[in-house]
Length: 253
Ligand code: DC
Image (cartoon, rainbow, N blue to C red; front, side):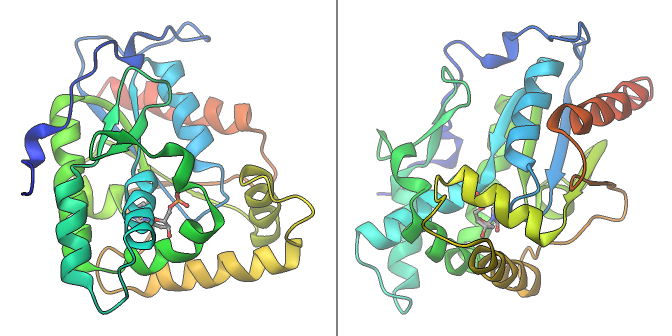
């Protein structure tokens, strides 16, 4: 039986208590959501997590939710014709995060599945899963519940500023040269020597094509997002730039 979407667990000990290394944190009385969207390999996850740490906010990796759904599809043997069954299984799995971990880890049926979601087969399947409208609306509802429970949040994905949180006061869109993205992706997935840069480049361009052309929640750059090209920037350089933007915006909130 599907479990209520309001069942997202509340942190036992939230990483939001982490102190800023730069000495600047968002005042603890301020509610804020910062969205970071963009294609794979732009450094989004790393940057989002580190920005959250620096500002003393929680961090949500929405890609992990779609990856978890793809893992469920593979491990339970659903075919592409069994979308209704897959969506029911994902709802029943009550995907949620363990906020006592930094970064928070994802669970399905109360079992941690972090070890599974970065596997190559999951990465290959996730673009398909992310095209399913019923699944997307379920994930977006869950993300809004999570924000209600973690109202000081940095969230990263493909549709966070455009669909999930269109009123977010600070939106970023990260981009980078496809070859740089392919190299980063190989490193991130530990595939050095297994996959060539050219092959990975082809894979991520194909994934971009699927992510950008789906009818529901496509990867788009929101009009009001600040675009940062990370090809030539260090992670610290990107975060410094973001922190500066957030600091400026905070006065208006
Ligand atoms: O960021 P990532 O590689 O972990 O994302 C995995 C997949 O999930 C990717 O194909 C895009 C999709 N995704 C999405 O459609 N919407 C999101 N908010 C986050 C990820």
